Image (cartoon, rainbow, N blue to C red; front, side, top):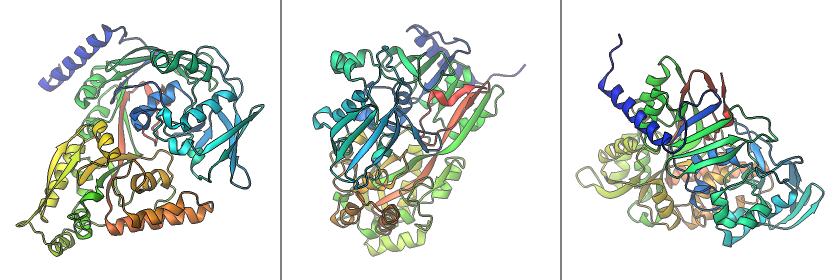
Length: 512
């Protein structure tokens, strides 16, 4: 008889507790093969995918894409495809756009989807009063006109990433008539979309239960019911999958991923996604974090050792904000691990292990596998060259708040997602001073980035972003660390297609 360890008993007990808790709130855990249960790593604070902090949380997009449809679709390999728009483009003068709207689509309440829903959604997203975090993108469109299923609109300027945004954060179509009737509060109580699943039951911080949309334009979903259990704690997610209480989970420690995928009845997949682990530098601290100090901090980080020892090989060392899947990735940009050079730079700045520069670094703990431990290791590497950083742990919501108000610590760890692979949404919004997402705000960098926003020559645009990335690396304005590999564990009876965006969408899970 196989012996059962104390650890396994504790995990099983935790899973049983979670199962009891969820069953008590109306979910049948052992619901059969027509139910897919996902132990999810974040909660869902809001159903509106176009406003508030939730709208720009890359992880939650897995849920939003399941209930709602986007203007433009995106495949797991990041390629774009028709969504609620079947075709789109710019006019010859690049002063306006045209969009063809899909026909034969119905909302979850049975009402017909029309071009008016698209116009209303884009107009609402562009209104500053609405609170769309990407309002500066949508607000560039005006003077919408509808002719049959074709929509035209004027644009304030040419934005080469506009239609890519329509497959990205806040790029969702909402029902004009229904939302106008029930308002924001009513929509939160009973959200309506056109997506493959409809909301059946929801309890904040506990679960979301969805039912298949029988009239979905994209075909019948593989499962009649999908349950998202909100399990932010990684240990509890391990317990969920190991006990069989959930069918699939993600973002667990890599050592647990290796252990679980080897177990009978379980399988796993781990693939690179578009998230980059990076350390923001606050430009307000530039008087002490001089160029020498910033470059020393970068050269002192042994990224390969971190990937090998902490992440069990699951990660890709990176030196720019553009991952290999991004349009402006430049493999020639390198900031190599060189502790000797790092020490020399710190000495030139007037610091040493005996006379260290004291500073602070903020980090999440448990949002990503080994995020806190990674920063612990980096702080240890820094200490050897005379950079003494105190670690402060915060929740990712606090990071958003501090970043928007430009109050991050001198160093702040974050995982930046760029699901559409365009340099404007990686280097651009992360580093352009006027962006609310930027921590480094200086005129020299803004002067290089500014002209690229509306560059119509695509080859020139991409070359320009590569030059910006090189300049950032040479100046040490941000410290890219790794491209993440996302671990997913699931029952062997299922087949999961990894999504390069990191969004674990139910439609990517099928019965094996």
